[in-house]
Length: 383
Image (cartoon, rainbow, N blue to C red):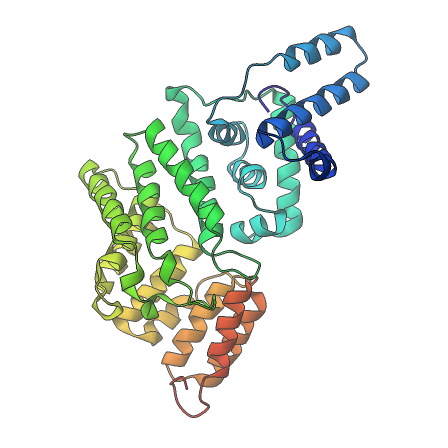
């Protein structure tokens, strides 16, 4: 990207390099540096294409210059994130493009993560690529004074990569460890780049505290285990301690932001020795702060869950009914659970069915269908 400045050209060249590897490596063997082989082959493909398309001598000189470009530095992924999050692009385009190029996510997964139709998401990505190419947006980490203009989008990208790893939107596995690990790596890299930015620390704390619960989120068969039923002895206590330290650091700075508040909510959860001992009133207060800073339907939904724990399922249901996320399976799952607790069993079964139909992940779908099937017709309990 730094050498050629054209995302479409680079994507095509890399694809051609992987195709060549699939053809040659089975016979020739894997080279000593597989990544170096791919990069060199892709670079040569891109140069060949430029030369084929060149109509002026200057294009040949440009190709020669590219061929002699210096090796890429080790933080290229972070550089490309900042390139894609250039303020010349709209925020939604920044996030969509970066997730597509660097998040390991396909267009359908990104559309589900951003709660937008897939065709809309695809158009945003195409327009963002074209704007980067036409505007000649440079491939580099911006100067310190320029970082704040891009930071919000960069944090959103890292968070969404982590979210897709923590609760995959499709496929058979609930958790994608590769994405969780990469998001944490990027979060720590950002922390090193901007050590005095509390939202960076807040995001890192949020991811660490969430990842600490990861071993208990699925059972031996890969089935989903909800938070109240998790074996807390399987939580990573060292990670929880690190996350709590970061949350305390954020509190001392006195500059609250959305990621810091979400990290504080996770700190309350991970501080409780059992589900019954969770300080739900404090969590409601934190969601009130989050709604004041960064209101969204998803935050409204999460707050409704907390309110239901304090004031009962009917109070939570009243709030859920006001949330507008008709295609979001989690809303229907929350509603189903609250209806069950309120004794409205027929409605609960229907809501579980809707949630399962909308869920893209097989583990979540299986869990929702099992909840539906085990509701006894004459009581508010599960079998």
